Image (cartoon, rainbow, N blue to C red; front, side):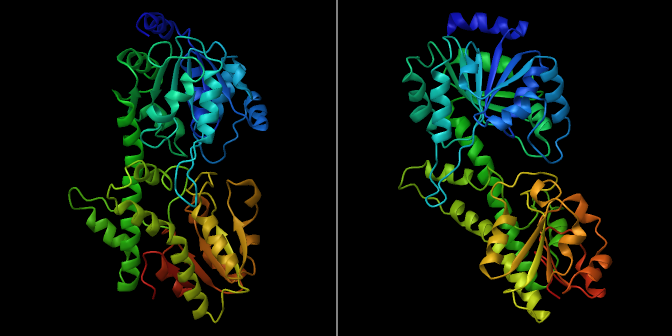
Length: 443
């Protein structure tokens, strides 16, 4: 890589690199768009042909409010700088390939499922040339780079660190701010050699306006899963405090505001639980990467606390229905919001989906509304008409502007559960609603 790096650096400076991005999702699409904007020729690869077809037309298969993303992709597709392919063969001749595929965990064992990553890396290794750099942006368990990825590449005849550079630069994006996060978040890049580190830093500087830290594979792996485990732990604490506030008859929002006035304290927002592709699984990637005899207790407990929040919400709803003289069985319930976070269409591991499943198991009939998910589009009024309970599951802007006095005239039973601090319970109770809320006094 030493001699090859000179040519590589020159290609970066001249914007002569050909860049490939594998996995056209919440990470890959904006990453490919930004590299095209920076002046590189970019090919995005995804095995889902329908997705590739849309992207070739300059259409982004991601809903929700993603400022600038649609315009960015359309501009550079039309300019001929950004193209798409359903086959890894499209990566032939690429100088750098970024891997952005899903890396889930097994729901029964919480162990990593590396099939998508293995398929992508082995396919890339079969087509890349000597002197190329492979960058894993996917979040992976510590030890994956040295224990698996390196071997997958070398099985195809390459020598990592000699003929091919290999780096792990885990993404830090968030739905609703994909481009902003890619541009402004510091990057942590684990590399196989100082030469690869220089090359990676040169590439990312073309799109990132923040520090780029070069380190080892293992450090980069641990940093990413640690930061998401840290957030999971803090959300779990907030959810525990919220449940305590309910039974003690105090308002979580007031407690949170006053706690956060103390220096060094930051009590996060409680809610229905956590979702998305990262936080529900990354703590397990961290915990399960440790030796079997390594002690870890907080991570599994936090996972249980957050995963049980939909069940807690169900109990609050059942309590409200009971006050109204209704049972959950046979009740018609409207869930407002199905994505895992506001102003997004990302429903991966959605707490709303888990709540829906619990309600159906109880014999309830469920209607769902979400303005960002096509199958749940429609009129809020029609979704709530004749229902026995309304659940605010996501704090989409549209739900913050609902006229609840009008909804009161449409529902059959005035039961309302707010899991996202959207409404003021006391005001609605005055107008006849039976209200419950996570972190709110019950009466």
